[in-house]
Image (cartoon, rainbow, N blue to C red; front, side, top):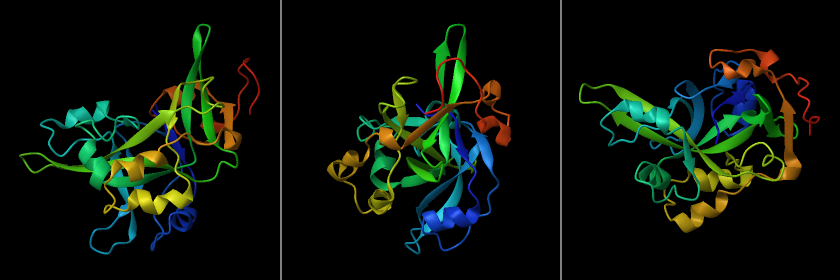
Length: 230
């Protein structure tokens, strides 16, 4: 799964990486948690260009009677996303990219759980495959939300957890964002594990366990007694 992630790159780098016309105004985030607001890239239906938007993490399907469902839909499994009622419409028509520099996962070590930061080898910007939704309550409340797709862990991550977010290479971004492409046979093959050889993992502070914790100290390597950074 993916329950916390990091986005620390400046707006100019996000604009360059995701081919945005405008540089987004962003602050470094070292512990983005479910139900919080976070950035995503999607196609503007009026202009056909990529746009950076801020959405709530935890998908609220357009048909949901209660917004609270979003807290249970922070991830969507790649293997079933095309069929699951909560995700299938968004999978067809409302796909997005979620910019990140890495994500956290936890491994049980005797009596405690050790958090790890997992990123690309250079800790540069990556793109999680995401879905977004627009929901309105009968009273007129509007929530735009997103979920992150997950797949089997690669060989580097599997020692920590059996799942990881789908990280899309740049050559797949256009297809993923193209809402005219709706056939699962064009989309599902994109939802594969990130290459293990390009994956960097290091143990970090247990302070990331607290959703309110923030700051660059959260991503600093700490001793964990279970092997070195890789």
